[in-house]
Image (cartoon, rainbow, N blue to C red; front, side, top):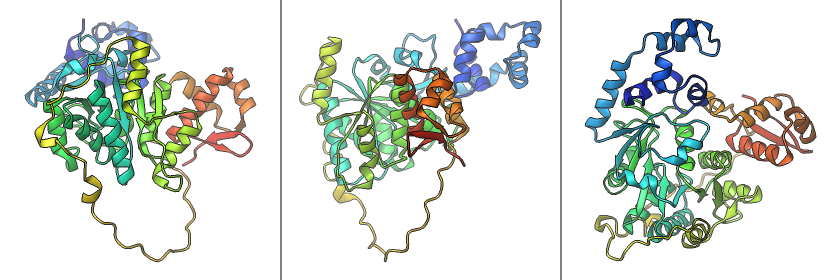
Amino acid sequence: MSAPAEWLWMQRTFGIGTTRAHLALERCGRPDEILALSARRLAQDNWLSPREKQAIASPDLAAAEELLKQAQALGFSALTPDSPEYPARLRSISAIPLVLYAKGDRSLLAEPYPIAMVGSREPDEYGCRAARKIATEIAGTGGVVVSGLARGIDTVCHEAALAVGGKTIGVLAAGPDSAYPRASLAIRDAVGEHGLLLSEFPVGCGIRPHSFHVRNRLLSGLSLAAVVVQAARRSGALITAGHALAQDRDVFAVCGDLFSRKMEGCHDLLCEGAAPIFSGVQLLKDYEAVYGIPLEPVADGTRIAALANPVGKRAAQLPERPAAKPARPAAPVPAPRRPAPAILASLTETQDAVYTACAAESGFDELCERTMLETASLLSALTQLEIFGLIEELPGRRFRQVKP
């Protein structure tokens, strides 16, 4: 077995949230086996980069040990693939996290019915009400609400779960010592006390442009399903839906106002095959029928007093929007920007093949021939890549990569 410091050394060497660490495990073995590679083997291995070979030849395990001590001082313990409590669902994803920092009730990682809930950071009244209803029903029926502790829908979901004495997991997009989320530190503390806080990022790692994409794959990876409550087109919540599809998780979306831009992303998902959700209770009962593990509803009287009605009047508490300014002539819509390199690094082999095939504008039949994929697999990959913002569909069922 590899020690936690060796796993953290491997994470620092091969990266966080990328498939390269996963490939290193498959190709070279566990951290202790990688550290035992001979100089001759390193010299002959062209897969490893010069920087990685140098890290293996002269490993800095002391730095890893220090980071683990700092996390422990903050109340976080380190879970690695060797740990008995390491979540089994994460072992099957294509970019397996090598180290998870956990604070709170780690038994939640073994619960049978975790459901990820994501959505807009600036929801309207309808979005808040929908999030509160579904999260309350999931938590109260015996499921686990998994979300990302960001402001907006995430916070509403965590608060609603805690308010009924239910179970919730908050996955951070920064290190254990960060002040993120600054706008909702109180709910973060409540989740750490009554639920579970998780982070893949070490102490000293703040928010970076790719942090949320890296975090989002864990939200879906930890869960049976992902529920998108409210999302505009190109919302970050849709990235979680894309990860869920890639990880073979179920995807649900809330139906909303046909004229609301805040719901366009949800409606797109529904058109692409996501299932509509109307009841968190019914969702869990459907899973109970499939898996046969009895639900354990929250007992009466277990509400947390401080959060007894956390979001009941949330819409009324939102600051009023300033009066609308006179409309200006519509400006040209800027071309979408190429996603961060971390997104490309976390693609599965199938997604990467389809993305590469879309370098030149291509029709669906051309992509079938070029990638040698079955129709269903190609359609799934194209949908995921479009959600990630990596490709775009053109008239005539043609596809191409999104250009910077």
